Image 1: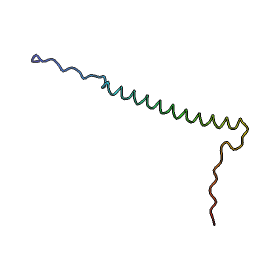
Image 2: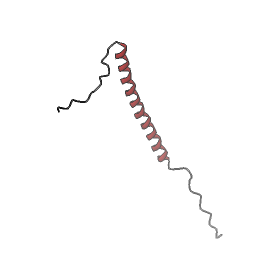
Image 3: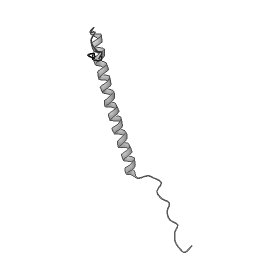
Image 4: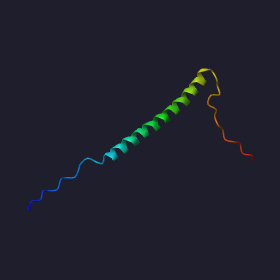
Length: 69
């Protein structure tokens, strides 16, 4: 070989910004999922409190509007 060194192998480590972006997306996903879960649990808790207080109209059932035939 004419005195040249072989090229260095490319970095096998991906771009650090890519890892940071993936981590940020995971954190955002966890936060959104946690907020949605908290909202669902709040609604279920409100319904349970209503039922435990003895009320019967806690979850009104929507019926279709009668058609005028």
